[in-house]
Length: 189
Image 1: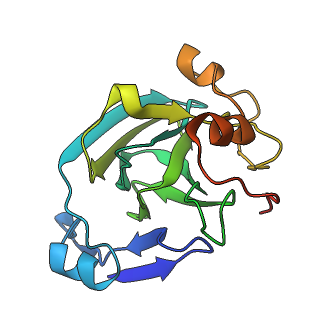
Image 2: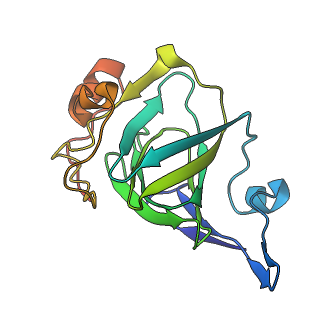
């Protein structure tokens, strides 16, 4: 199993060892001791599973008072998974990173507490499973506009399918002002 760093501290790509033979394959999708040794020490308290069609874009979502870390994997299809650093004082505050996750590459992305998360579906459909480090708190959830030019996220879909809620999210700067998060004067990739 490989744990790969990204440009954002704490956002980790996990490339598991996949054992294949004539019967199919086997892999570990989580091992607490191995993940803790690689910098993912949190306990997970909730598992989520979504099904989405091509061009669906979910996000960018996060919780403010009860931030969630998320360990994301795809069990069917392919997604482009994005994390945005919203941690006050972080040297990469306002920056993003992304990874292609698929049922074929078995990769996972760990998005630590304090980062916003979103993904778009590149295949006909995708089933996404993710573990969370804190329980979902709908009154604590906020969203950031996926297409905020200040963030400059290069989404690989041109006409995303969005929920009504995701269509209404404010810009990164607006969210920072509303939530009282520390303001960064420069947003760069």
